Image (cartoon, rainbow, N blue to C red; front, side, top):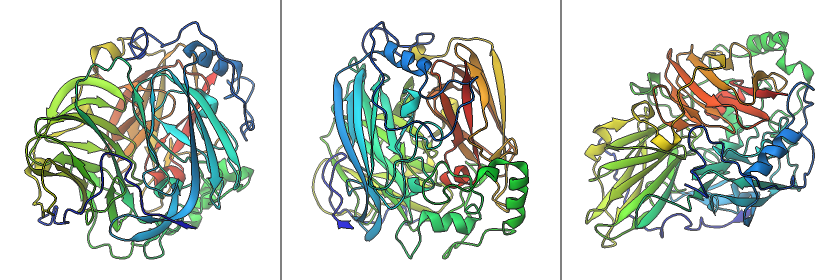
Length: 548
């Protein structure tokens, strides 16, 4: 194992600042994302060299991730300047400010080194796996070619220990994205990094940019790991892996059958054991009740606990763009900047009609971009673990170096904006159209049995919900559970109802329904799943498959 202190990569340097927070409580040519425009041009580019076909066979009536339809779509996007990167996933020791922990990370730091390109660039990234388990790299939110999506057993074979895999695709759509594994519960370690695709015709005016990654942390604390946590919850016996992550690899062909599901349900305990140190139920009115399954000892902002927060420096009057990313495994975060109002400009990479707010709520996988005009002084970027009674923070400072003990900023309890109150910017709003196909996805399961599923069926990589290229597809998410779920779709964005924002991740409150519409314009096999990693790994995911 390698021991290195986390390097200050995002924003500016790290400085101690006290820990009293919350103690009281477009692109080239036409805009590539315009409604009705698929962002393609007449340039061509050959398919990249491949390190192996997907592990699962694709029925002949469905488009393969390596099929000609996928290659043709990528060719129409066109080649751009090649930007080369390398990520090494390794076991390491990380300094998270409050302590050092043994975990896994990219290049010995958390978050991993930021990946930044310009829309239209070709990303060529080599993933080197030095972990004791197979892994992959998923490009969260990016509308990329299907064979680069990083889902083991669906779009590629897992990258074995000691092996490498070359990802190569055109990053056509600007926005705030991130990368993480799609293997087992590896996401809940230190394996994540921001991915920023800049717009070469950026319409926003700002002086500085601050990329802020939020996380909940348990790995390496008190002998806990995400794998032991999954077992504790009761989800570690089901064999519903996001892929061959080493947790429960190769469990046999019966894992997706109804008989197998019944057997697993009978074998599960009546209720998961409580985590050590759980003081009170995790409840949030904002989330509709139960806030999460896992009690975390630490919550981090850019890899730092509140005892030793990151400090971002600016001048009074500076206009700052803050890109917020929730990389957590089981926690929604409420975010506010003390002493400031924020103007929301984007969510999940896509522009919205600007809206002012005091605070934002981010489910796992969601991203928001905001603008603030900096006042003079020292201010906390307050991050509340919603419903869990704990917090994290970073610091915005225009002067001085002395540590400060911050009270709970009033903005955390002020006006709070959620995605359903936003409207998509006009140039990216989905054109009104009746759906050609409606897919009903009822979210099922319970905390008692930990049998999370979609339409009562736990994940089976052979299952497909069929769509065809060119269709307007409506997914009707119906949450039949007593728990909230952030539902994420790979390879596409969808529009929320009534001109709502374009997103790839949306929060489903308990016993609520949300209809989302998307244009089927990116062929292949695409995951749909809850972005609570313990729910997805226990069965709450499925696949949209393009029919030929």
